[in-house]
Amino acid sequence: MKLAFALLLMSTAFGAGSAAFAAGQVLSLFPDASLVSSPSPDAALTLIEDDGDEGDDDGEGGWFWSQSGDDDDNDDDDCEAAKDASCVDTSTCNAAKAGSVPPPRNGLFTNGTAPVVKSN
Amino acid sequence: MKSLIAALALSTALVAPGLAVARPVTLTVNMADYGGRGAYLAIYVTDASGGYAGSLWMAGGKTRYYKHLQDWVQLAGGDVSQVDGITGASVGSGRSLDLSMDLADALFDAGYTLHIDAAAEDMRDSPNEVALPLTAAGAGTPVPGRRYIADVSYGF
Image (tube, each protein chain N blue to C red):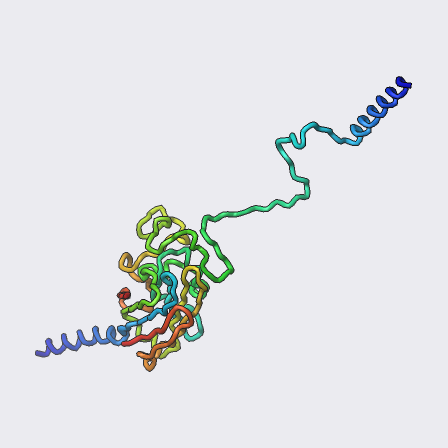
């Protein structure tokens, strides 16, 4: 009786193991031993761009860069056309300050005279 | 004596046209007490058909914030060279800005309009904060702004 019971138990164990192998399942002693997890083929990939512009608020209609601690008097992080010869991309260069270059010849200023500003 | 008169007439003829086309104008912008940091202001002119004629002043030096001056960016194409040499510091809450300039006389009573776009940190943008028709009769008459500017006026 004991022998029949042992044979039955052994055949059950072998049968279950082979069925699992045939189904392509890999049994592991560890919950997740794989180092690389590959996404499924239809998984959507999202590209996140960071242009380095703090508080970019396109479309918001307001200023959202207070966390930057930026101050108008501090232009260290920007290239300036009037000072920096390496500033080749004019779209990112600051405008030349009044007095550093002549005003634009737009026909509004006569004789190319620059405006004189006084702020108080 | 004749040569002296001729020289005088010639010099008058040369100088007079220059005086006729130039008009010294003082533009005064009084900022409202909006309670924020210095405001960026784009001061520009459109012609009778609403087309961009040119910029007169840009208050605020960082190009990356010009996108908040929405109408100016749209009309001037965000071209920084448009404000090269006419750019200064932003203008604080409750302060005033006086611009003295020699403007072309042809700008007055010809359908031209002076516009100011304004924006300040952490506050709403204000495109076309002020639209001020350039007329001789309008000199000395303050025009109120919408959000950041208390009033704007110009005088000769």
